[in-house]
Length: 163
Image (tube, rainbow, N blue to C red):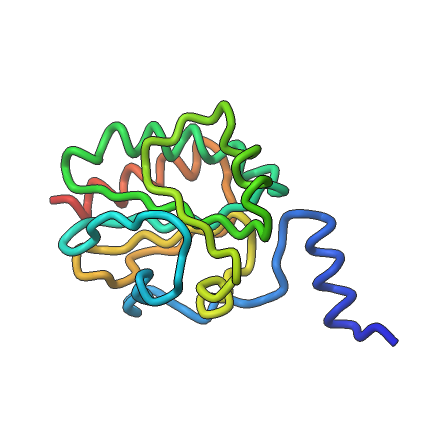
């Protein structure tokens, strides 16, 4: 017998947009130390930086739209102290590689193949991103991707944090 929770989780996977967890972290909380989760890939230096941590997967349509915006934001603010870490949730590296093919991404990309970090963070929607201040505390949480609206919010918040 399949439980209601499992059915909901499977539906979310097939729909490719919403995960069934609610965010456990909130503004003002310290974001988990990424180095403790065995992420595949090289993490950049995060100390004293404004950091955008973005969760994405190959099956997520809005994630495909968000990558060019993150690249644009990274190009604009990286010299001033912005770091972007995109965390991929795909089980298979080949799926992540296929997603990244043809998508410019000069920011850091790591993979949470075991979903250790995502289980800790409990993101509710794909994509989801956390903007961290220079001390590693969550300044804001962005649920989903809403095109120009998200881009504008990223820019306003990043500029405020870099001052």
